[in-house]
Image (cartoon, rainbow, N blue to C red):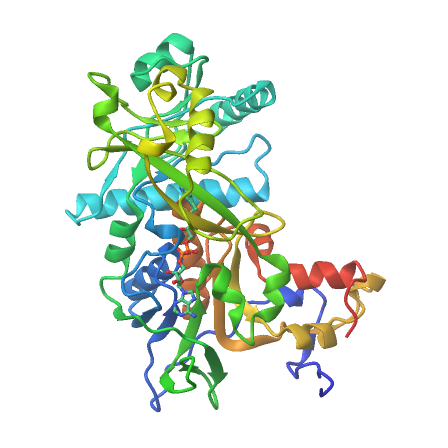
Length: 441
Ligand SMILES: Cc1cc2nc3c(=O)[nH]c(=O)nc-3n(C[C@H](O)[C@H](O)[C@H](O)COP(=O)(O)OP(=O)(O)OC[C@H]3O[C@@H](n4cnc5c(N)ncnc54)[C@H](O)[C@@H]3O)c2cc1C
């Protein structure tokens, strides 16, 4: 193996050059200038949409025969604000992400587009006493926040009002996010990718750099699929299947989840008026069904539907709406299982693909605390980006993430605070490991 060499990029003061933005995409006359996106879930489709809005063409590759067959294939995804009491970096990202996604869906609905969604409100019940304290802190933080357009609207409800708002009796009061709701992810993916050239049933197995700029894609048989101006890998867990991204395997965890659904007839005259979010969730009727769940399982990475998981979902639902749960039987439920792609710090990986060996060569002594040393700019795999790791929050994370990547490709600044962008940078894991002395070049 050849020894990795620190890239030549000139040196500059150590203002975290390991998180420098990548060089923007340059149009070439020699090949297709589309950005190729690998993965037809909400992450990939959102990348198509934002790039298309900037006037950059996109080609979307999906290995299945239709879009949204992975985690993004659930019939309903909650659009629920993720608010943290302490305004942490993850809270800042997902709160902005929630606003971004709900504005996007509202705009598409206003334009008369065919996206299935409803802003019926989300009732959030505390799952335990600690959660109740957390809700109180959230309420205080939100009530102190400036009342600007798009600020997260929340209303505290006692047990009686919460039950009235939902339409079913619940055991406690909680917080009501009246502007929140749900979306049907496959309809959103389809719409967001409507201007892209879609290549379904094609698996991308290898990415090789082109002379100058851009990259070449190959299929598993080694045949050329095409040359593109830039590549975004949005393949959920399979994002780490490329030579450029193998190192990411150590920082990605698959978390299986199963949802269940039952016919609205089970409820008789009762209605579920809004989304109920507790330890799990229950949705209003869509296509004659109510969806509830979901399980979280670190020790399985298959997507088979099991009666055990249906039973676990019923048991979870019983904590919030026992009367309804008592009417449900595992054998009479429909369901779907998928894998959430998560990371150790629960934040996605969004940005240029770091060249792992070159990082080790460029920043070997970060563990020595030499912050005044002069380091070269971040070494990336040129024109290759990653967009993955949304865990259980892809609907509120992926569209904002896509706007970050599109800004970088177009050479624009993004509005998210720099510290939040650094917290999402894929190289954070390499930098942390070097600083802890865990990696040697
Ligand atoms: C049970 C469950 C419930 C959930 N509920 C919610 C919710 O209520 N709200 C919410 O916000 N989020 C929810 N999530 C999370 C959300 O579904 C995910 O975060 C989101 O769908 C991830 O989107 P993605 O595009 O990253 O991945 P995916 O949707 O999995 O898409 C990745 C795609 O890439 C394709 N691909 C991979 N490699 C290649 C390749 N080499 N070539 C071609 N194609 C490739 C795959 O086939 C796949 O279609 C839930 C998840 C689960 C499992």
